[in-house]
Length: 458
Ligand SMILES: [Zn+2]
Image 1 (cartoon, protein in one colour):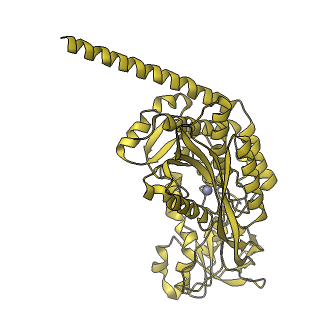
Image 2 (cartoon, rainbow, N blue to C red; image 1 turned 60 degrees about the vertical axis):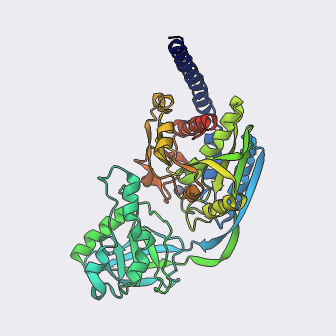
């Protein structure tokens, strides 16, 4: 009987303690959100990165300025160490990018296009040919070499607007841009025009990288804004003899040196165990890289500033990682993973912020069921802020390589309904950032890191 009573008391003490813990965490997380919402540092830093530095391909002077700028603001945010990781990156430089449509029926008309990153140029003389419309990679086979040879292939498969995730829609259509030019060249195409990857109908061309296969002729390739893709498709229907002339003069020079830059706060209890959060510092040169991915970089740094401001001393070492070269070759993520392999540093968790700076919705978790359950158990702290989704899912291209080290991978998930309106286009500007949404995202990440740091993930 005595034993039974003792057990009940132990249970009550445990319940009382965990309730007290929960209340203490709630108070701290409330403070984290208040700090993020009451301070303009992150918003102003993103303004500088977008407006004063702007587009920043890894090989550009702008990327070098972004490295020094983020190193400085990480120090101001409380980082005790700044680390640089060198890598060689492709040195592609955009040139002229113009296109004109010639129709015997409708006359001529200029089209809004953007050269694809790493694409070979047409040269100043341009490329002029008849056009064949193709509905996605799988349609090349249907049309066949006879119809494609000597023509410019117009890939016009739109992103599917009926899917639940805009990222899935993007993923299903992106093959046209990434692999389309090489696939079309196998059928004898001489050039490629690719419908911009966005759900919006507008006049912004969305660029992005294209990858050529070895041994296949490399053909020039541009993306076309969706408004003009629709027009081109319509004209082609009634005038199959129409031609496009496009001119691109981008150049690929020898590789150059670039860098990841990392801000670190040493952990008080487990200095050799790391929790990292990051985004990619490079951004397409036609954009300001505000949503993609200035927001993710600045939010990662803001976690450090919030901890510093509130006097939260992390038990584990905390790093904000500005990955370089996500957009072209992923050298930044390769370099970081190599560093982890060489040093044997233990990485408890890695959070990637690369889905834009809109309202936080939740987190995708790539880990065991037990870990997902543990993180989901903290949901009550987030729900009052409208953050509700804690579920299995992918993290991102930059932290994904840490999976082989057993790191728990997490992808920060904001509301992505409008993300592809901006992505890789001149529409990705600082004006499209909402200050409060950006701040809520920083706070959500800081709150999650606070909990991971305090309770671990075992
Ligand atoms: Zn991105």
